Image (tube, rainbow, N blue to C red; front, side, top):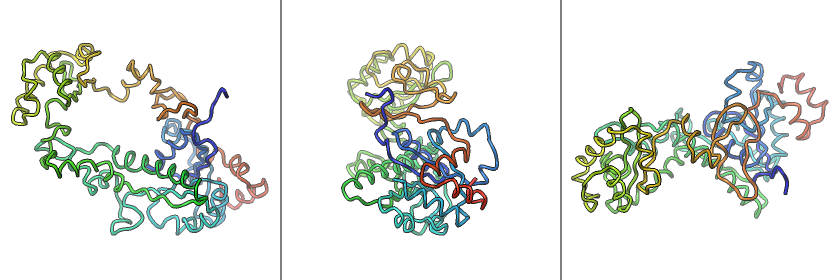
Length: 384
């Protein structure tokens, strides 16, 4: 066995046209899984020079960068040359932009019928809102996914940009690419993957439709088991102003929770919704009597579905994460390790974020352009 086994997507070549949010996250997943990802940067980004922020852009890790002017016919021709040797193209522009540039699916698939052309947008490639501006909060709002998140009597709480950008966008486009690559093994043909954040956010919300239908989900926010309505599925403040989480849904875990809290409450009344406000008040009073870490020590080894609420900067130091190597120090920055894990073909961080245009000559030469062509393109301003 090699000392450096390749990831499960080893040999897959990906061209990523630089964008923000979901596209980079999806391409990071592909890179971590072993794909060679080439990032197409704009010449003005190359000319802007190095920024300290570039060195810590985790969502650009593992790439190599070429500077290509997609507003230039020669630049578009260069992108199409890369496409000829690629397995995947990932782009995150608004609908129609790549077509206007001359590098839409028709042009790319004509050059390479095996190409997986992955597009990630907010609203999708069609529909009345397709061309509208938006951000994560808007996509999850329209999908129905923002509405249930929040406490009773309060406004919905935006969950950062986890649901639209990353879960419903980047993760979905990565899954779509992998599925299309798998299907290509049977058909020999590529296809377009249309990943819309509004669709992905709706998928994440799917479980609520069945629960509502059978009466297991109230339409009143903050009145349900997992939306902070139940006292046994909540976060509580501790004596030191920190927080702990409990999720003791199952009766046996709820009994253990009551035992550790020292509360003489009837465990059989766990799902008495009328008693929930009073029980939650009792829980809150007890949790304020100890610090977060004191509670963590008290619950250690107890099946009560308990965990301290850690900041993103504390999490890497937790013994569980340290034992599993869930975080790593790569290019001088602590960050999440690749996931999921594989028995034979481990995922890995391929390298640090590139400087814009850092690998232009190297990649163009490796992907089929000779030195004279590269020199001509540089002279014409099509590459940087």
